[in-house]
Length: 214
Image (cartoon, rainbow, N blue to C red; front, side, top):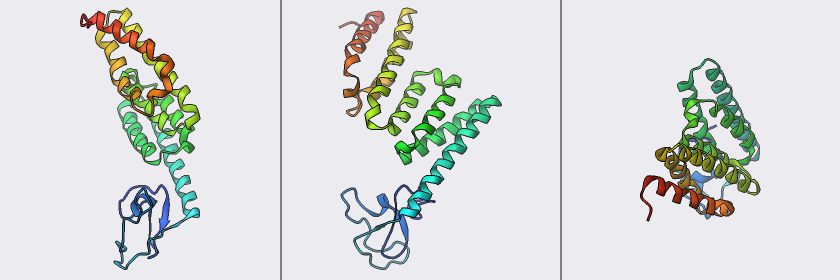
């Protein structure tokens, strides 16, 4: 179920006046204006309106779920066979798919994928942990996002503090650096204000450990 013009998975299928099906994002600008004035397949003039295909949208949703379920099953089997590198490739494919669909319908599947990825050695790295949280954030309902972000902050600060207790400034910097970029995004930063003073204290502690205090 692909957009035949852009060759990407359909998210919101619509039909042009010429009868061809495209994704809404391909056919229209965000403000609703048509991107196309002639059918790319027949060259006939197009009406400015497009028409939603409800029955096909349901099929697209089913197809997405099946693809994600297949990715999860494949990753689980590869981990059982200790084929970690191949499993990581599957995680990358699934992440791109979740990014494309960006729908809270897939939250439970994203969580299952995250649980599997946590079993890999690579998931101990700060950038990988941050990526898992970002993936979950994208498909988490808005009302539940503050709790998810606070969970992430708790993990990042705990790991940074443990690294500093061990005298590992570089390790602490990785836990505060990469994840800190995501946490500083405009749509994320307001969700963890209650922990920002603690984060700043850790940054000052890290600066002292490194000997680069202002």
